[in-house]
Image (cartoon, rainbow, N blue to C red; front, side, top):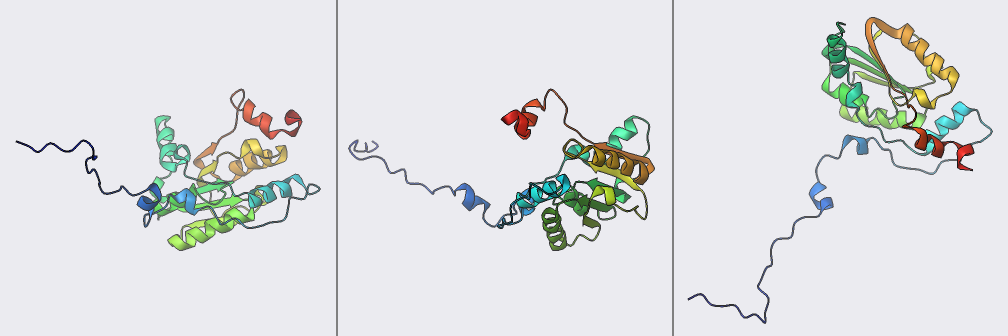
Length: 219
């Protein structure tokens, strides 16, 4: 007969404790978008008398915007969509890619790491994100990626046209003259059979976020 355990004393259910989430993550590779976030430092407040472009750059320098890979803007996906419409684009593994408003390179850096024979160029108006992206690219040893801090309206012609031009989450946030400059840059720098990916925010889906963004609507 099995011995019946005394009900007055609870059974010994001691077991090995499962490691906490932070302990499980110790020593593992952090997500790329976390690696792209530079340490926050104290910076001067935005000068409200400065130009709109200067204020925008200062805002993105003061609060770093987390960037990450966008599968919808990957050259492989763009090339697939082009093929379905009868357009033969440059080979994805040997192409030239430009991203306008690249931030800290969260979208371009994974591409550059996976496609070493392709060339990637990114530009952004804010200096801090570009510095963070350059630091990570250097750490990863990426020699096929160039991140440039400049105004898209002042971007010089490239040595060769780009097969893919990406402007994700940029068009809706820049002034009218910059939008015209963006489209003109695409027309100038895109290869004859190249693909441009330009996303924008549309109504009515963006109405709520636009209300929060607008000072007049918040009063």
